[in-house]
Length: 351
Image (cartoon, rainbow, N blue to C red):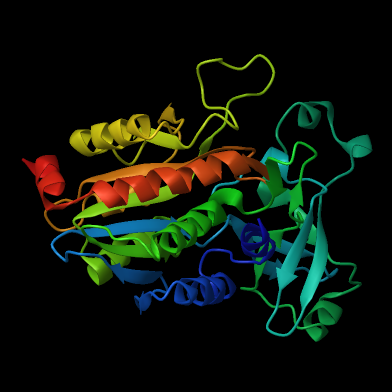
């Protein structure tokens, strides 16, 4: 899990993914892959198999939900705006990192203390527009002297940790550094193996703010088949629906989300491959979010696309959890799929 630790501990808000891109490039190069990038910053490693007739795209996304400094008050507090989807209730009193050109600063999300809230305020979610970040400054001038500026990115603080079961990973940015991890690990698994296609494995930028890298990167790869590698929602809390996704029960295959219905023949091929190889899997059907697959499948005349990832707890917050076992089985599943995905199989998806 050393690579996942490195990916999650590093910072990469939407539009500021350069540190993650550096890790991706280093790791993809270790597999012997040729490196390709688009002009927004998405990056892929290309590995040729025994045929160039089918181009397979695997893509996580490098960005994590974060914030941007929008104002510095005269008292020395920071106002901020979200980069990605945040529920205001998860923010209060949380620690954050403000990233400037030369240094990083720790801040705390502040608001009115509960002692002075009006009764009607206590019973509502405190709005983000009234929150601020306290960096321990005494004035606007002091903040500026430290090098903090409007436009600087902000990310949560949550160091990587393996929980006592030696399977559950606790970290920030699991959405979607697991997609980056999967993309790298699949190329590593394929390094000495043959496959009847050409694989482009990597990650996009700015998914959390509108699937932007997913719009440009297919022009770089021009894929025949695409796999979006992303998280899904784990619903295994107390009193949760027992039929929903859980940590440790296998990689998650998405049958429906707000951005895409996957190619049905590709979906069935993925399920058959999992069952043939005795790889556990789970199914996700949820309209509460979308992925880069929403753009991939609409590229040019259409691209058979599906989302494969892992059930994750507490996404779009400071902290999240995922199963190491689910990630490892995700690599096994994707590798098995690629080794079977020849031209005849691809043509069956589009007939």
